[in-house]
Amino acid sequence: MTTRRIAVVSAGLSNPSSTRMLADRLAAETVKALAEQDIAASVDVIELRDHAHDITNNMLTGFAPPALETAINTVVSADALIAVTPIFSTSYSGLFKSFIDVLDPDALTGKPVLIGANAGTARHSLAIDYAIRPLFAYLHADAVSTGVFAASSDWGGSGDDVAPLGKRVEKGARELAEAIASRDAAAALDPYDPATYLGEGRSFGHMLGGLAGE
Amino acid sequence: MSEQSGAQAMQFGIMSVSDITRDPTTGATPSEQERIDATMRIATHAEEVGLDVFAIGEHHNPPFWSSSPTTFLAALAARTERLIVSTSTTLITTNDPVRIAEEYSMLQHVSGGRMDLMLGRGNTGPVYPWFGQDIRQGLPLAIENYALLHKLWREDVVDWEGKFRTPLQGFTSTPRPLDGVAPFVWHGSIRTPEIAEQAAYYGDGFFANNIFWPKEHYQRLIELYRQRYAHYGHGTPEQAIVGLGGQVFMAARSQDAVTQFRPFFDNAPVYGHGPSLEDFTEMTPLTVGSPQQVIDRYAAMRDHFGDYQRQLFLIDHAGLPLKTVLEQLDILGSEVVPVLRKELAVNRPESVPDAPTHAARVKAAYGDGPTRQARPGANRGDNLTADSPYQDTPAPAGAAFGLGRKEA
Image (cartoon, rainbow over all chains, first blue to last red; front, side, top):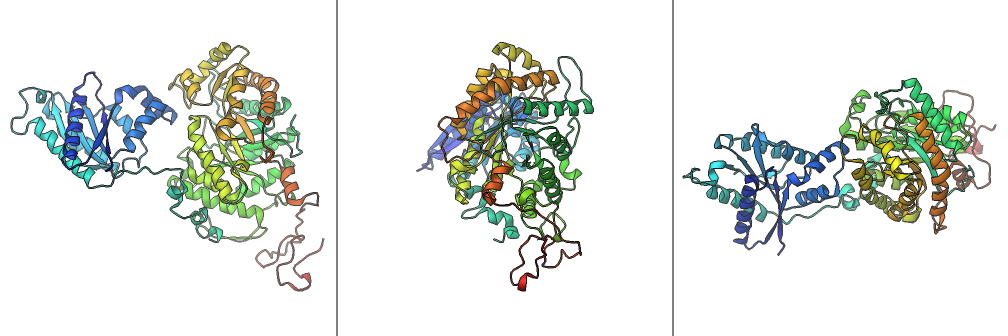
């Protein structure tokens, strides 16, 4: 049985960060839900703070320095993505968006995504649905319908008693696990394999259409 | 010294973007006239110091001046004797391939064959709509336009219908290529496997600019090009024709080079205010240091890319003043290139082709025999018939008694 790989992108800026705490919970719960279906999964966590300079340099030069390139490859080759960002000024953080911006626009097509976000108060919770979800819709990623928002109060006793954070995490994680389980393991396409860019068994003559008499 | 004998393993030269950039150390910005004159001076000096190639980019917006490469290159060819004039790149997407065929064939004649060209798609978005094209069609444009260009240089009378250009019936691109041999074409790309495939399919050269990105990006493309070159039956992978870009700044003492170049690097239009000079030189082929450091870095290129045919350096951008650029050329010509020529010749297999020249291509096509000299017949407006507008073209099959042939 293939081990599935889950990439976790955490855009928290402080260390320790409550963004990362939420990300870790979502990842652990997803692995648990997959284990219940006898699917093994590994988790790679990417802290965007560690790549902040590289992300800016990538935007300026057009290429990812080696450490960032490794991180990008981890994300785009994963079976699923857990993306967690703090809400700044009613939306995802600039660093989070900058990371998304240096990905190939097609890189997340069809990839299951679980969205997480955190902020000081629950009044920001809809940012998941009006800001972050459209971003992934644009990228043709398959974000599961539950997004998990954690307010500061969720980490103490004054959070939501009816649907506490643990329940919300579990719901989102189950949906992501379902999405992973319903798909084949991600297979990496080599962009430099002629079968990838020409189509299996095809030649440059096919790209020329009738122009070369083929 | 460079020679037009067709027997040169490696060609070395420089390529210019044609940017007009403020000198960050003086605050002075050259005028267009000053920069065009300076570039002509730089290009002629490239020949004086023993380099083989000068290539110019094509742009259609300030602060670049090179909108019409063949005009500049024709003037340059007239001022030089051995230098191969080329482009880096000619826009195959937004230029009419008919005009490319005509302009570069003309350049081939006035330069006596001392030219080739590098095709690229361009990276300035608005150029596409300015020339009536759609950037989303960049790759299909590159593929279709080159198919037509290739045909126009090889067939006297072309009937054509494609997706992007108005159809042609009985069209003849003039003048016909010098000696009946089409200009050599490089296909430049930094990320697109389809372009490497295109170069391989036609048996043309492939050029990786090797400037802005880590060499690993270009290694994969060049390896693909070499494999596909063999796949299409042009030779072994090692026989594919590869060119590389590069970027250097030198001083006798390494630290002086760094100190002198840093303000230009830090303010350069492309990578300025981004990664540090130290990070960028580590990650990309940019080498700032002593001539020996440049030699070491570039002598190792063939370990990464295989034995290759052309090395072009970018040395005149980012506001570097003319005097500095000429000094850089002096160092390249006297201390760097002669050593690189020797080092890259060591253990270079016999089977690896020499760098392409018109003379070598003529020889390959005709041996020592006479070359084609295209001589039009009197214009009867008959290009649309099956007949040829040229006197030397063999009669079409089936024409009795050579009726299709007009003897000179």
